Length: 141
Image 1 (cartoon, rainbow, N blue to C red):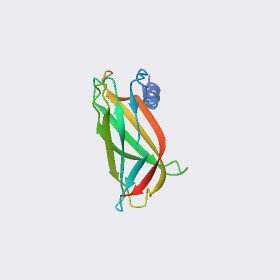
Image 2 (spheres, helix red, strand yellow):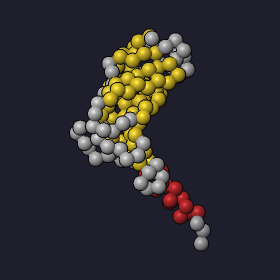
Image 3 (cartoon, rainbow, N blue to C red):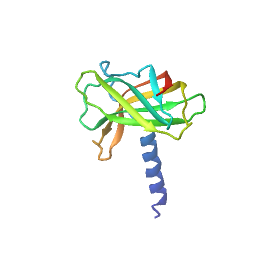
């Protein structure tokens, strides 16, 4: 008996599991915001900021962010900040140096997410606490 079909089925199931990132139980006290203005430097460094509040995290928790301009479908990851989940409001700031000209000033779409790396299954998988997406203005800075 060949194991190839079984391994293929296991690989397919694992891929589906990874694509179906679970949301944490919806806790209305958890929130992430994005400041209405971010900056882009001449060297391509994009800086985004905002606030977050999360209820609990038994594993490492981060505030990640990404930015997209227009309808190109291209989204750039802009850093990640360690999060403290203690029911208090905290500031986050993420920066990343992109190729100059990748993102320029003007209106951009930002997504900020509070994400926990849940390793209860033995493999650290992302578990989303809260996510927000909104348009902001990038200014030269």
